[in-house]
Image (cartoon, rainbow, N blue to C red; front, side, top):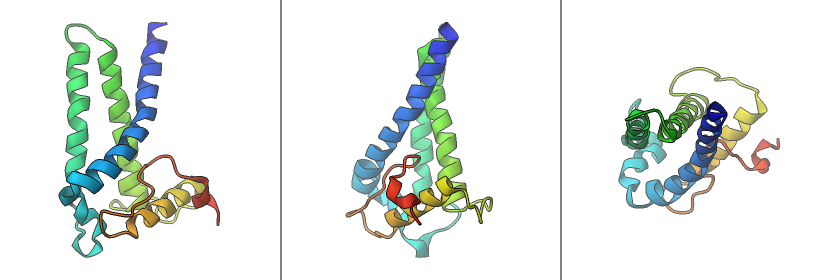
Length: 149
């Protein structure tokens, strides 16, 4: 029974991270930390590494701390919250860096409907080069309208 509750905590954390991502993207990345995110919206400045990549480090810190405090003195729920954050970060990397921006050239010609919808929604997000007037701030949840051909 305890293992099932650890699974539920991990899954719930993973799902809640989409809300955290949306809020952080809209109010932090497109807000007071725009200077780190700005190069991600400027095609002429895009290189393999961007200032925007610092957000991976920023999001990793809570996960690392939760892992640490989740095993000391014994294994507890904090570990599984950290695991949910880590798994979301891995999914985010796969979706954002490989599927959407193709910084690693895999799935370049995918016809998987979900991946096509993700790419469309993110393209709409990037049509705005400034920090205002953005849309589609989440990552894994995409409104239905982006799946229509």
